[in-house]
Image (tube, rainbow, N blue to C red):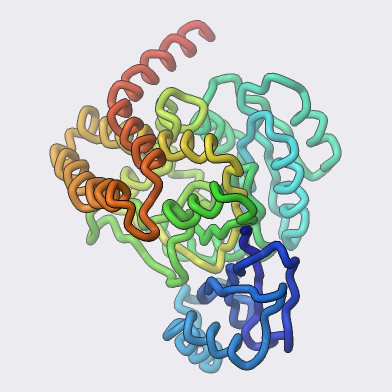
Length: 396
């Protein structure tokens, strides 16, 4: 059965919560005075949740984070520091032939507080005019077409087109919270912060595929704000940093770090890895990345099992393509150790658990799909570079 998604303020819990009876569970985002502080997965009986046990369960799920945030609020102390005025940003949505998702995303963006931000839709190699026609319904949004395929090319185009120093990226299948942009921008008061990522929660868990995606490869990175300092941490371990579905960067990173690697990302043979590569480059240069859970966005996971298999295979390709770039171009010779660690401590134990049919083991076909992607990742990177050179050569 499906899982209901609930967004609850713990200081104002209703006496009872009713959901459709088709839901057997509820994934609850727990907020305190609007700030996400935790989550809980609870059973649903007869379409109802409620009573004193609900409050106690949510308080236990939030744990120490509840009391920490309560204390911060009481003392009026903000760990992000003081900001006299938030900067103005460009908000960019990179998309390709998904007008239904894009409509939902743009509707959410129109609910953001109007603080002068610019909106861009980067339409990447469209096969139809649906996106262009849709954007005409949003006069605040500027439509830009980018004909070099790939999410990195689309993001690079957004950086070039942006009128403001700070550029916030969201995917077309994401729904940003009204406080999303403000929460990202608040963290740029430190000039060493080159990038800020946010919390991503599932928009829906209606199918088995969506349930397994959230269980095995969630986009969220927890409810604690974290600062990744390239001068102090391993710049190659970036899986905790966040995802590009909720991210803001300085436009000036073009000068300090460089653009996204257009051989990486969705729409290219590598399928992904572009955000990890950029994060690693930022940290290798000694700059900082902040993970900010207040910058909340909701992501629509792929709904079918075949889409899930394809997604996980793409993640395998993207990770190994990213590592290939690090090894070949950046001469990071510790990359094989990263690959060996992932294989020994994660992939092999997961496969053994699946073969033994242990409870809650990851389905074998998903693990094999990811493993196949890992094997093909290195060659995918070289193929993508070759294809990119051919495309750009024909455009000159």
